[in-house]
Length: 498
Image (tube, rainbow, N blue to C red; front, side):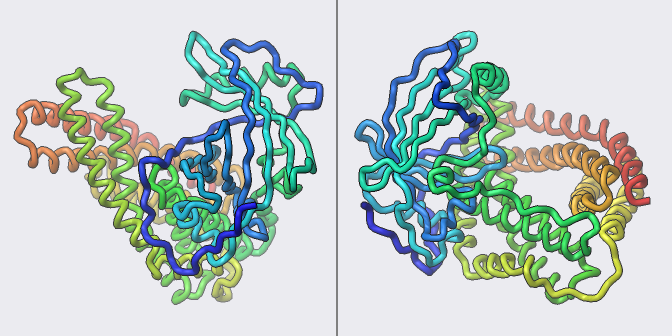
């Protein structure tokens, strides 16, 4: 059996990611099946029968499992890899590293620093899986792997438990075929899965689930504490993926959690001691500034990659150079980001955030959640009216910030206000999307002009001109919908908050 691994108590050094690290987004549907289930005939080609032996690692208290994280050493046809699976919205990020050593790689221990702290990693379960299945094709294009796993839970060579499960895993980035495949498999006898990963089932643990929301008539501070706890968990859950820097969505969700925490603390200011709440908000503002440059570059890189597809080869070449320029900036920003995430300032913030939902410093107040949401909506309404019918870029950006704050305050009040708050939140999301496009276009034009100053190519200048014009068109299209959406938002806000 592999030896236990002791995690260092000191902050990790910046994570060095080498080319042998592979990261993919795993999008799948799990189904439960009985002993007599057989795969129906599906269009595609059979997958080779595989034997997979996986040794899972966790702490003695299963801290990773309770956080929805799995770490395993897998052997498949003599090939040995380490795999780490992290939460990523509704999907999971799978990080794989070729490594024959029996102890968890330093890279993975560093990524999991916040979850492990000083606790040891040790083998907690060994699973042997016989896998059969079909790579489903539609119009000769592979869309999903449908696999049937026969799982044996092993200990000292003996089988402690056996079970089967069925998976539909997307393979080409488009999930439109998954619901149809699920329907076919249910017709063949598959049923609802309980949602537990194989390891959780093997250990007979309860699947990680969100803590129950306070009752609608619970004290106001119960709702504030619940919101703080939820966003802190979300922030910490996306810390490993942000450190790795392979999937932009990890950093995006960490930044969203940071903003939501600030918004909750801002909205709940009448309930909290100013020195306690304001100092925490200041540190969250700092974290948002640390995460912001990387997120902004992720947005621009994704946009320009999409734009390059529509260009012909000679125009695509200078745009490819521009994208490479942005990617180089992103790599530099990641280095700065990693240094901050290992700093004592960040680790102290995490300690304070973990404690905040349990022991906030409060003051006596009769304010209600509706009052808090109404206060933020009033600020938004004033900003919209002050901006007028033809707002400049600065006023549009201010309106965007006020919309986010009003939305987050509404989410805090939603359990007690109900459908009027939900409708306001939905409308605020639509407004945020349009105002976000407007802001992204401004930033994109700024990046293009900066790059153009460094280029002497006539073709690059021509493509840059086209791209600048596209950004102006994006802003104009956003402006066409802006006033209509803002009027609808004000209407929803008046109904929700009066």
